[in-house]
Amino acid sequence: MLGWAKPIRENDDEMFIAYSVESDRSCDGVLVWDKKTEEFRIDKLSATADVMSTNRLAGLIRYSLYEGFFTPGLNCMLS
Image (cartoon, rainbow, N blue to C red):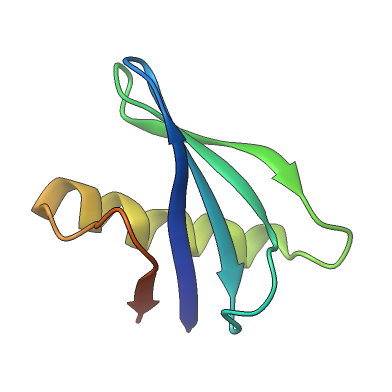
């Protein structure tokens, strides 16, 4: 699986992350990372987005956040 993620907005409690599965030229939706509970929720989901792929990509992003690999720019996620 190949995915792309980019933080688009952040405050003290949450980080909003635009993401795409398989392509860096589209946006499949927006995930919200709750910094207190350390959980994701889907904020927006495109009509063609797959929920299972979204959840799998969220797991890759979560791992990158924990390990400190997630950058302010465009991040490539591969599993």
